[in-house]
Amino acid sequence: MNADATLLESRAMTASKAQTQAPSRSLDQRMDALQRANDIRVKRAQLKRDLKTGSVQVEEILSNPPDYVGTAKVFDMLMAVPKFGRVKAARFLNQCRISPSKTIAGLSDRQRDELVRLFRH
Image (cartoon, rainbow, N blue to C red):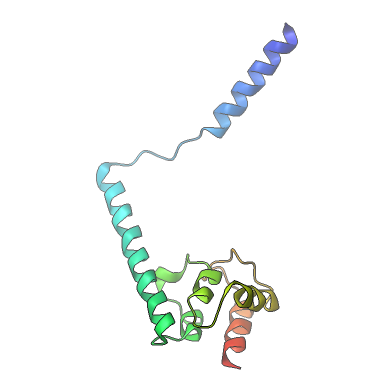
């Protein structure tokens, strides 16, 4: 029975650690955060449409990213470029030693420069 009690106690400790909650926020704070997130999604969707049509160049976005693009994945931005699919986007990222999950804001100067250089050639 002693081993069973120890097992139950360790499970209870593990469960309590896994159930940490986000800090409570007021309704106004949650609504503001939701509005900001929706605004960012709308701006990103428009940017992807602009990339598809060619009215915006991906080099511009990578060189001088707007604030709303910072948390977007580089892979997703490359996928919005005409004639880019999963394979070509992955190849470009691999050539520049960039993880597919890397965000635009998370790019180092070297990675950013290499990626822009690939697009300009």
